[in-house]
Image (cartoon, rainbow, N blue to C red; front, side):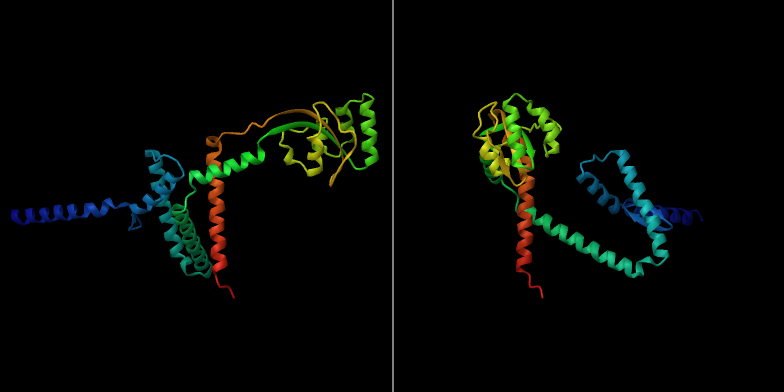
Length: 261
């Protein structure tokens, strides 16, 4: 009798030992169904990719989330939602999304933007925006006669800022007395730029400057050498911008090669 009891205990111990590895692969059992640890691992990877550290507290939150999903999943299956047409359509869209995302992620990994490409783009931007920046005021009116009248009044001592606040059609700068931010002259329309760069510091245009917006009266306040950020300061943004352009080109190439009927 004692021998049989000892044998049964030994069998129980062996069975428990064999079950431990399997149990370790699960984080819980919900309504008799094991919830695999791999589900929590997938969520942990996603959280880690977002830059959030996986602390013990976060691990517990992930575990709770996985268990809650299993509870809700079982109820959805119980109600037969997996068999609905809407579910099938959404699953197909999700499948497409994951595959396309992985396609582009893999392509980007194999075709990264190089430092040389980023530096070349930086040099191009510097060349286009380097040189001098201009600080100016302007008054924009609809009629040439009004612009001529303003120029005459300025020559007689009228204050530029006061006229801009009352008469300028450019409400943005007009509210500030016609003041414009420091800018590369190429950022303005051609007619405005050509007139601006001819002025000396403190000088006002002698004649109205016509553009697509109306007639401008321009005063040059000051000039300075352009202050551009260093390559290292803008490198991350440039890399991201160029990577987006390269990916867009790849996508266009795929579309162009596709036979669509």
